[in-house]
Structures are given as C-alpha cells and as structure tokens.
Length: 229
Image 1 (cartoon, helix red, strand yellow):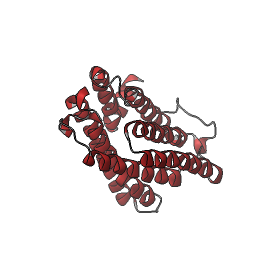
Image 2: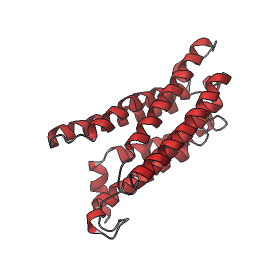
Image 3: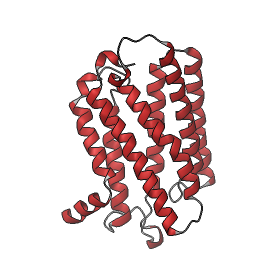
Image 4: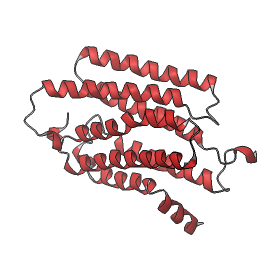
C-alpha cells in the first residue's frame, strides 16, 4: 500500500506540491496570521487531501464512492465541492481587502451568482458523475474580474512597500495565471479530441497549476506583514 502511494505521488507531482506549499504557509504564518489570508493554510491542506483522495479513488480499488463497477473510479464530486469552496474563500478574501464600496458590492453579487450557478448546474447535470463545467467557468470569470478590481485599486493607492513583498499580490498573480487558462481548458476538455491532444491539454493544466503554486510559494517566502494589502 505504501509503495503504491509513493508511486502515485511520483506520477502526480502536483499533489506533493500542495503539501510543500502548506508547509511553507505554516512556517511563514506569523507574517499574515492577522490578515484576510489567515485561513490560507487550511485551504491549502484541504486542496492536498482533495487531490490525494481523488487520485486514490481513481487508481485504487480500496477507495471507492460507488459499488457499481461502471462508476467505481468516479471522483468528480470531491472536485465539484472543492472548487466552489475555493471560489468562495477567495471571494471573501478580496471582499475584505478591497476598499471601494462599488467593487465590494459587485463581489457580493458575484458570490451569489457563483452559488446559483452551482445549484443550477447540479440540477441539470448530476454532480456525482459529471464535472460542473459551466459553474466552474462562471466562478473562474467572476474571480478574474474581482482580481482585476484588486489590481485597479492597487494602482491608484500610494504604498511605500514594493509589491514583491505583498503576499496577496503573488496570490493574485498565481490565481490569474490559472483561472485565465482554466475555462478554456474545461471547454476544450469536453470536446472529443484524440488521446494525444487530450494529453497536451493535461500538460497545459499541470503547467498552470505548477505556476500558480509557484507564485504562492514565492509570495509566502518574500511576503512581509507591513506590505500586505
């Protein structure tokens, strides 16, 4: 069992990457413990266990949600739940950090739209067996728009600290890299391409995941409490 787990982690490098990010987030926690990102380590370790469980369900017969052999490898439900929680977490972070009332009002509207899109998607397509593609796309677009609000506001304020020391700047950069690409990957992933093209899209997905968490790690290592905003 242990050897199988090690082999799976080698084949899915991004799972250990989440754990490494979590270790760094905990180590640097004093630098942002009283900010809007104070629950970031919890989100990261939740990401790790979600991905680990997803891999085990797909490749190990001892971890299954369904007794029917046709669906034994289905693990999509845990990702559907995770993605909604992930969006809501960062909507809340930016809702606390952004100061402009109009932007904050739009963030609340975006939050309601995101939740509604997941409810509608779950009604139309069984989330136990189907990826909530449309809801993921809507949630991604809302998050990108919120990040744009954040960068616009940052441009207009005077800050004596350089942005490379602002943890939220690096988090925002990482999220932007991933969620600009994510909707396109979802749409193209639903098209019945040949296996070579599907492998290419998976390579792109893993690349943007690595870039996103690379930005997170840089921000955690360079971030300073006084520069946070």
